[in-house]
Image 1 (tube, rainbow, N blue to C red):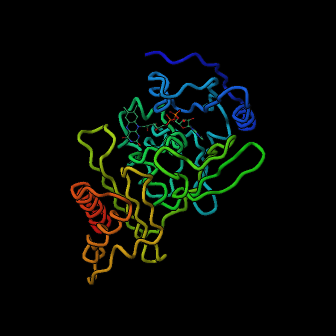
Image 2: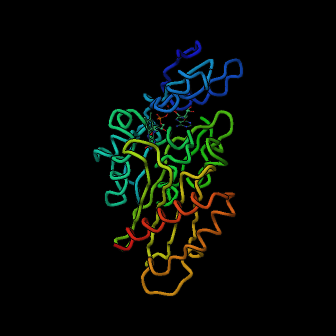
Image 3: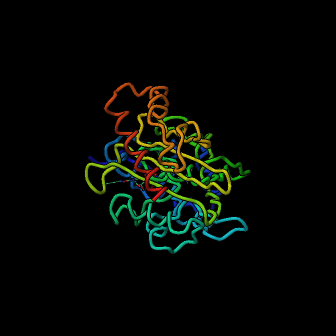
Length: 277
Ligand SMILES: Cc1cc2nc3c(=O)[nH]c(=O)nc-3n(C[C@H](O)[C@H](O)[C@H](O)COP(=O)(O)OP(=O)(O)OC[C@H]3O[C@@H](n4cnc5c(N)ncnc54)[C@H](O)[C@@H]3O)c2cc1C
């Protein structure tokens, strides 16, 4: 199918993009990498009157070290992260995650901000960035507010962005040398979106134990303090992992199918084991 007709503007600045988004006469939509929006346009699931291309906005392409980590603009592509063309504060975690997203053709154009804003619960960044403690910069061209990445999605495909707001970028803190990371996603074949995914960040020095479960029917479940999932006795984190607590959490999120709960439990256990390896 072909998209419904639309106007196209390539925004030169963040302010211009936000102003176009606020225009009431046309249903305006941002276009970043187009890797999710493109198919939606072709299928006419989205029929905006105006596409605002933000890939040339300098503020959204920024990538720099900060005093306590890095700042990455929303239009940084998966491929630029994968290839190490932007600074990293995570000892290579970001590059490994980026390299596992879809296929290289998708990674060449798909962006961090587009992936977060699209809000697919099976997306890699919506699962990984909350776990790493990323804080988003949300901008409406006049003011900026900060939002923890784990608070972005109200529900699947529903970012908590007001009309005229866009994701400008994100701050990622430097991980301490003691931090342990585990990530696991279950896909039927490479390049497909995951059926279950989990990320674990454990930093005993900084008292951080974060877990995010993705590929749920709803928004990813991001726990800033995941200690309740590790209630058993044992010296290693993997020994303390409590599958019953995870099961209770999944049930509380409305996952009634016991096979789906088992899949999410196994995926989280594997992520925990990777964090302990
Ligand atoms: C075949 C295929 C396989 C895929 N597999 C995976 C996978 O394994 N893992 C994974 O994580 N993803 C996967 N994806 C999705 C891919 O990673 C996309 O890059 C991503 O979802 C969207 O990013 P984009 O930059 O292309 O955004 P676009 O498609 O341009 O935009 C997506 C949505 O976000 C909005 N938007 C874009 N930028 C912003 C912004 N800065 N602020 C606010 N709103 C914004 C747009 O208006 C639109 O609604 C796959 C896609 C395809 C086509």
